[in-house]
Image (tube, rainbow, N blue to C red):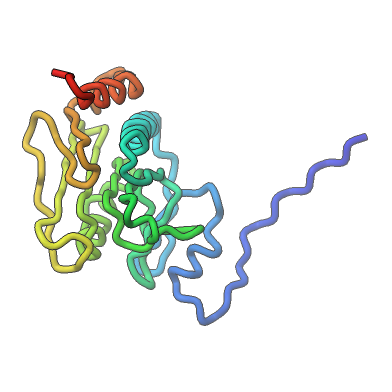
Length: 219
């Protein structure tokens, strides 16, 4: 007779007293859960819903496929924390780090700033994404921030007007309609209106068309 499997152990609460709130968060936050560290407090994201998950998958396929095909860097999704400071760490839905900056990645997290942070607004994250994390990404010098709201059917793309990767810059809206071209993911351009089509188009087909349009001889 097979023995029953033991229940998984609960998250450890043992952390050295000299750890910063961020170090404690990274060490003890349960694997598989999504959340942020805000002013020393862990904020766990509740269920995000089907619209959010569809957009997440769509954008991850597009960005990861494009970056890999072009050798631009690494795209990660939703479980990689970006350290902001000793009391703050954010988990973007999607992030991108250029190939020449992959040294900021560690086993468990990334040191700020990443090159691109993408947040897909969910019912529980709207204020955090639009205010707290917007200000945090801006403060540490993340060059580009995409904010996508599937319920309002809005996409806003921000680009830092100061020197990238350094404090002191301010975000400015970088898209007013039509085709958007990323400054962080070199050469990546698309019409953001596709994000709100129902149903969403095939991400693989769109990725293929983006790559084919850049082939020599393509019109």
